[in-house]
Length: 440
Image 1 (cartoon, helix red, strand yellow):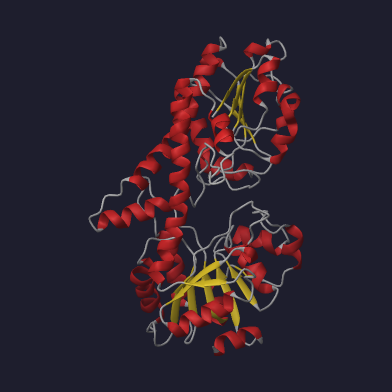
Image 2: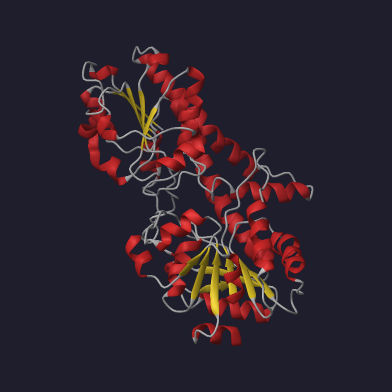
């Protein structure tokens, strides 16, 4: 408990390793109370933070300008920290197996700069066992220290929802775990400095690791169920959203809607469970099926775009298709694992060269990740088809009149195709005006 007291009295420092959508808000939150070092190996990112720019838009430029976080790309600064939080991404490989290179790399960095008496807490999403079986050996090898004797370890899964201004770090209950009671008590006390909603002390590190994977797998399965219904209802000529509106009149309806499941949580975490379960001889059935359904949705949407173009009498190869949205979710600049960009890629089979707009996405991120350059929406006035792919507030506020301004004015309304992936528009209003309209 001495470490907790030293942090509170600013005799010790807390360090964040990885300053992305998860790590940076944690660093800023802790810096309101204790001394914090924010480390990231990306020098360009660190330069932005030092200039008062928040590229994630999670806390905003003003908060970055005023924070006391000591932003650095110098890993040796970690030697100053008695409490280290690792919050690096954990993606999947092309074959959908876990890619542990970021968390392994962070462990090597932390290990090289680990001091006696420190506590290391991982927040990165992993399958049960990674913290103890993969990370501890790296820390010990790099530092020459013994876990449990010279340093302690724990796990506390991140629950930040990028772009969500309501459910924030401070008001989401935090799961914490430690290698022993002493570590657990220290970790819980430290997180309670910033977590107003309190903490849940998990029985073990593996329980905490499993809880994170399971909570996102549960959402993935629920969305997959609705997506399967959407594909079936499409063949039946039934509007899925109308069915859900009716179903939601019952008190215990869950309220999920069909959609594209991307990002680095729901679209990735289930694979970590499936991988570890299969290593132990158990073949996941429900979780694997849910993943397959959700992974197939970009192809399904792409097929519907082609079908609507054909029904509207368009020459598919020459059709001017405009995508509104490139990020993986609404009101968030993160384009990693964006499923709407998979829809864009699927159209390339038909030699369609779409234009993509997004008010939040960084053009360099889109270019680097997908090979496309974003187009200024103000320069679009000749579209044959508009794909409302991401429900940014800016797109919602455009309404049908704003959307209509993007079309080729020589087209009859029946030749103006709207693909409303997120159900943004009023279907009855759009249909009444005569647009060729389809929604998921």
